[in-house]
Length: 455
Image (cartoon, rainbow, N blue to C red; front, side, top):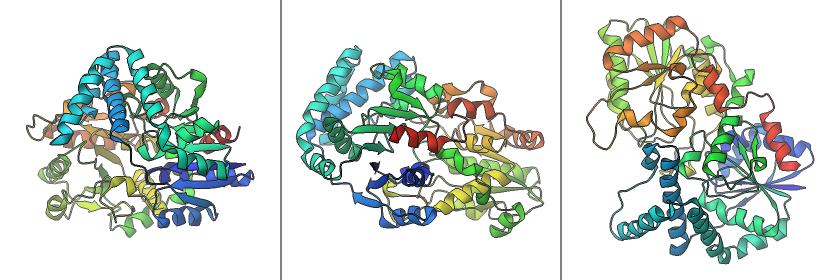
C-alpha cells in the first residue's frame, strides 16, 4: 500500500514529517511518497532524523485562472461574513485584507459584492463552492495522470488552506482515492480557510471538532476525527532536553538569574512587539533587578525582519536572543522550514525558563505543557487606528479559554514587574486545562493519525 503525503509548505515539516508518522507507516510495510514544494535540504533533514528513506515528488506548478480565483476568494469572504454573524464576532472579518490597489481593487470589489449577497444564506455559499469545484475540473489532467501512475491508497494533506494542494486532492476525490486532511492550527477554523476538501478531517480536540461542525455543517461528524496534534509530542522526548547547566552555558545564560522568555509574534499580528520587549526591559532596569532577571528573546520563526535590532543592542546585558533554527534563504514564509534542532531549542527554552510573556501566542500552551506560567500583554504601546490589542483577544480562538484566568494579564506598563514577580513566585501554569481543551491528551497521537491513513 502506498501513502502520498502532500506537504505544500515548510510549516508542515515540524508537525507531520518530524513526528513519527512516516516511520510508523514504513514499519507497517507501507510505501511513502512525499509530494512537496520543499527544499531538498528539508527532506534530507527528515531522512537523517528518522534514519529512513522515502520517495519524493515535487508538486507541479499550479496557476489558477481568474475565474477560479474569483470563486475561491468569494467563498472565503462569504464565509467570513457568515461566520461573523453566526457567532456574533466581528473580529473574524479582520482576516480579510481590504487594502487592495490598482486592478486588484476592482476585482476584490466584485468579490465582496457577491460574497456579501451569498453570506445571507448558507445554501448560497454551498452553491458557490459547487461552482468552484466544477470550474476546477479542467486543470486536473496532470494530477489525474500522476495518481493513476503511482496508485496511492490514501492521500494525506498537511495543510487545509494551501492552494497548491487543491488540484491533487480534487483529482484524488474524482478517482475515488481516500483523502485525509488536517486542520493545521488551533485558530484556523473560523477564518474560512478550509480550501482543501478531503474525505476525513483530523482535528486537535473535541473542541475543534465542534468548531468544524458549527462552521461547516455540511461535513458529517463521522468525517471529523479527533486525533490530537503532534505539535506538543516532541516535549515528551527526554532526549530533546539538555541539563539546565549545559543549556545555559551554551547560550551564555546566568544560572543565578530568573529567566523570562519573550516570544515574538509575526509582524501582522503584533506590529509593536519591539515596543513591548523594551517596556519589559525598562521595567526590570527601573526596579534595579538586572542582577536577578534575564530575558531570552525567541523571535517568531517566520519573522525575518530586523525590527528588534535597536532594542537588542540597547539591552544587550539583559536580553539574550536565541535564534530559531530555521532555513533563512527565502523571503516567502511558505518556503521557510525548521531544522529539527529548532525543536530542541524550543523544548529547552520552555523547560528551563521560569515564565513566558507574549501577545496572545501559542507559547502559552508550550509553557503549560511544562507547567510553567504565561502572561499575555494587554495594552497598546501607541495609538493606531488600524491595530488595537483589544481586538486580538476578541479573536474567536480565544473563546476556547476555560476562564480568563488561564494566563496572567499585563494590562499596563506599570503592571509588568508585579506580574513577573507574582508568576515566577507561584511557579506553576494557569493554563493546563486550556491546553487539554485545545489538544487531545494522548501518548499515541502519531499512531492515531497513522491509523486513520491506513484503515
